[in-house]
Amino acid sequence: MPHIHIKYFPVGLTQEVIETLVSHLNQVVGQAFNCSEGVISIALEPITPESWQAQGYQPEIINRSALLVKRPNY
Image (cartoon, rainbow, N blue to C red; front, side, top):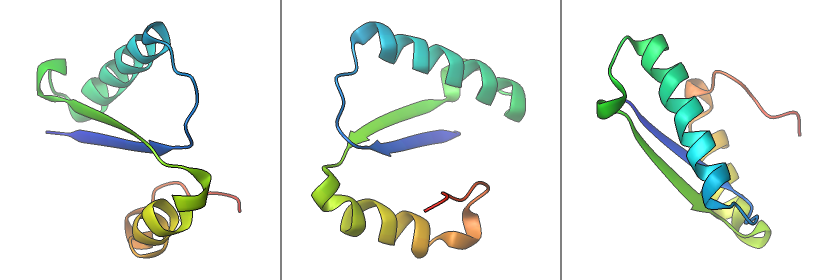
C-alpha cells in the first residue's frame, strides 16, 4: 500500500512510456508516503470515451468527490 489506479482514454502507450510513468510514480509516491517502491502498486485501466461517464466520471469523480485532491476543469 499505497495503490494508484489510473483510468484514461485508450492511447498507444509504449512499454517505454509505461516504464517511465511507473518509475516516476514510484519515486514520487515513495517519497511522499515514506515507503519503499516495493509496496506500491499501480494499475492502468483504459476506458473508451463512450464509457467514461459511467465507468470513470460518475463513480470516481462525482461519487467520490470528497476524496479528490485535484479536480478536473470540465
